[in-house]
Image (tube, rainbow, N blue to C red; front, side, top):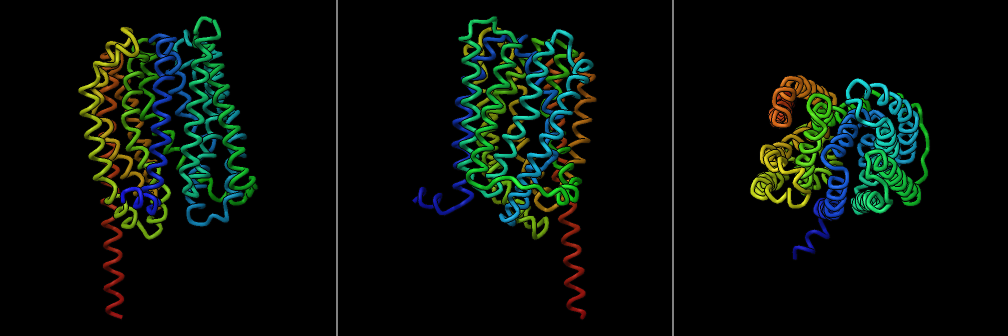
Length: 429
């Protein structure tokens, strides 16, 4: 009976595919994470995550939100796919190279001199150019709600990263961050090329429509700003720890955060699988996307609470897996255990706004909270190291969840008022 209901329910089926993809990815990434964390040590791992966190802030601007535009338009009209797919690839190639140069410039001011330039170059090329191409390929399938293909690409990506991690162990080198950077770039490039081949084969070759691209640059920019702000919100503390505290503190905190991300994966599966549906329901206004979110929030919220409890109880296991270098990460995980629950409410509220056409408002709130996060980290990290970063993360995540739902409440009231006035005029007429 349960299998029959899943088979006939598109959201349930897509959530299952997404969870299977993310579940497999988590299992593979857990092995990959353990290998890299142990091979590089907390200081070497801190160098890597410091660079990766900085790159994550700028990477969304490479595609300028064109992947999200694929989902929005294709979920409503599949016939427009080729031009949005082509626009996304062209934008990523055009902007990606310039952003790699920009990272090289700003990294000299934001990262400690001990971080190798080679690592900055390889991680930038990997995450700004090739990872973005992989993302827009996944978003192409997501627009058609073909989550089985999205899951396949996620697993493919994770397997390639695991292969790179195993390569680091067996190439016989010094297990330096520079060596890892080259393998990291190679694994991402291979995954991206395979993903683009699958999209072209199954969905169609890219077209190009610069007029539609120009007309939607503003909305695409809002999506890019939103993703960048999310990157700042999630990762700026790791870059700042590397600069303002120590590379070891950055490595310890990043390892704890990685465990939090793993625990959040089942909720993220539901969020990811339902994303295109928010645009469909939001076409009727914010009440449509809000009512859709109401159906999903109890399940996701219950999981977020459960995940936080499990994280708190099982945190002491971590040093036995990663080694004594990461013993302090036990405390860090316990500090961050509320993050999955907070982010469930944060993401669903944000998707209510996006689905109803309020992406600009969502982006503005995310940027504002990201700036606030950076400012309080400037004070807390020098004074309290990773503990300060953890406090800043909890406060910022909680604040963003509150302002997002405050905006949902505000725009729903406006929508209800307009509907009441319109109804009153109709009766009078």
